[in-house]
Structures are given as structure tokens and as C-alpha cells.
Length: 121
Image (cartoon, helix red, strand yellow):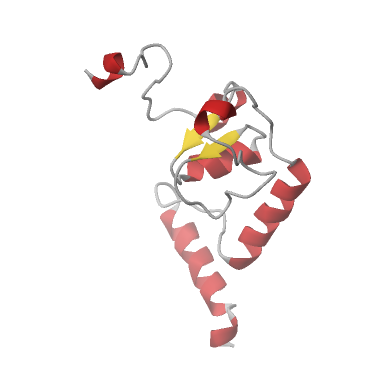
């Protein structure tokens, strides 16, 4: 198996359906391709390395070096910059909602955000 040929046993774990904040609080770091898990990681102050492309992959927010060095330099994100990024995202493209829980509330928030954009004024 690939896991054994790369000596990943005990180092890489596949998980799903876990409470993400609890997981992030106990994590040394997060490696992601472009997932919102990475954004959640920086919000919770967890060191994050993005392997793909993500809007939040910025100096002082995520680790900019290579993956091997990441595990030796687990620097948490700059909390002030993360706060500014989150505020920017909430004011421009994002909102709190869920497609898995209260869909009516989420749809209402989407509609309000669209109607507040300049092209609809």
C-alpha cells in the first residue's frame, strides 16, 4: 500500500464527521489543499500549510515555506491579520450559514447579501 511505501503509518490519519473546533484545538498543524478547514484552522490559531490555492494563503496567516519545513516551524497565524481577513471576507463574499442545517435561514442571508450588492441598488 502507498501508506507503507511512504512510511506514513502513524503520521497521517483519515477522519470525517468530527467536531472541527475540538480537532483544531488539539492539532499541532493543518495541511490542506484549499479547504475551508484551513480557514477554520487559522481562525482557531492553528498553523496551516496550504498545498493548493486558497484566498487565505497569505504571509503571516499561513506557512509560506515547503511542507517538510512546516512541521519544524509551527508558527501560529498572526491573530490581528486573521481578524482583518475574516472581517473582509464577511463584508464582501462570506456569511455565517449552513447548507446542512438551517437552510431557510441560510437562503435568506444569501438573498439579503445579493440584494445589498451595488449592481442591484
